[in-house]
Image (cartoon, rainbow, N blue to C red; front, side):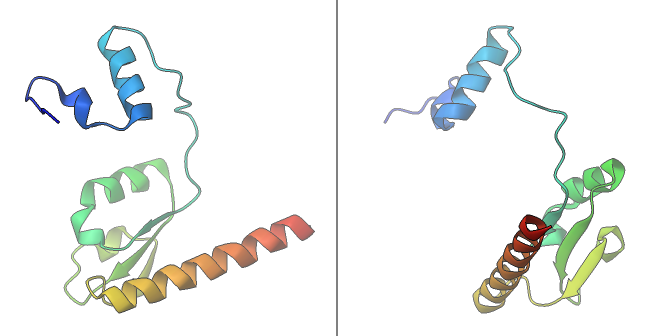
Length: 111
């Protein structure tokens, strides 16, 4: 595959590539932009400070695995103490969040 610097659309997946090409031609892509997530989970909040600040401005609650040296704990709505670098702890938190979301979904279906 020949990748050139002046053709970034080759690096994009098919759906993103279509949106990029529509934007490049001056047409607006058909994407709903007014839908906001109800929660954002950050597994390493130190690397995503810009996204945390945007979520704070939009009023979106955030959950983040905060290490002892995490500088952005004040931006997190629900900081969870843990190790965001270790694979075992990340797997544990992913399973924990998945179980909680499954239970919440089942409760929502019942009511």
